[in-house]
Each structure stands twice: as C-alpha cells, then as structure tokens.
Amino acid sequence: MNQPNRFQDENLTRYDFYKEVLVVCTSCAKKAMATVNFETKTARLLCVHCGYNKETTTALIPKGTITMSANWYFVVELWLKSPFKNDVFWAYNDKHLDYLERYIGATLRENKDRTHFTLLEKLPKFYHEAKNREGLLKIIEKLKSK
Image (cartoon, rainbow, N blue to C red; front, side, top):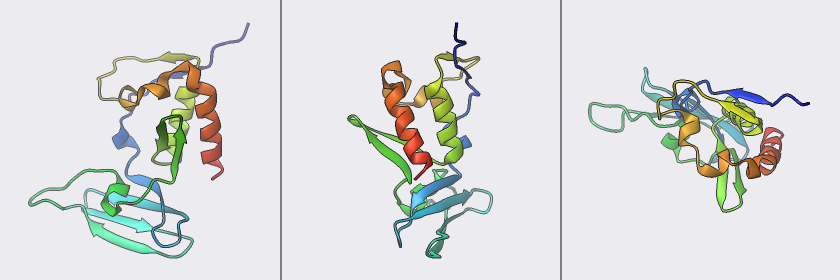
C-alpha cells in the first residue's frame, strides 16, 4: 500500500515570499528580479539579461511605507504565472512555487494552529481541489523550466 504524500502547513504567509519577486523585465521581456527592503524604504528592479536597473522608494504615502510585494512598486507582470481554466495560477518566486508544489502535490494535507492569515488559507479554491492536482502540477513543471 502506498504511503500518502504528506504536507505539513508551515503557517507561512504571502509576506514570507514577496520581498523577492520574479518578474517580466519592462525593457527586454526576459526574467528579472524585483526586490524590496522595507528598512531602507527602497525597491529595485534588476534584469541580468539586459542590465535594466531601476530603484524607487516604498515611502509612497506621507510618514509611512506601503508594504506590498516587490513587483507592485514597478507595476510589472509576474514571471511565474499561467492561465488555468478560468483562473490564473501564479507564484512570487522559486521558493513560493516549491511551497505550492508540495501543497498541491500532497494527498494528505495537515495543518496545525492556523491563524486564518496563512498563505494556504488565502489561496483561491482551485488550488485546493484534488481534481486540479494533475493540471496544476503540470503548470508548475512548465514554470520551473521557464
């Protein structure tokens, strides 16, 4: 008898992944990296393919910092995204994609002490449905090799 593929929720939130986001370069349309540093109140978009390099501030409101995903500060498209039925599957970066792959691929999903704020609890319904497992895992494989 096969052992179930087990996933233990690590209670991660989107904030655990969104400081480094793989994006589509606005200059050459290849893979680039958007990063954000809330301590220095800066965000940077860097493309190793064409050398595009832009920095901006995260202090976009008086006396405060907006804490958004790194791509938000540049209004750029996510690199790791793909249509799925009537929805869009996406991930911020390779770590986020790996976490989603482990969750989606698991036949036994365990959670302990969830707080209603975890990444997995905030996912759209189609990420959770067993009937979508195979299709989503195929998308993840394609995104990994993109």
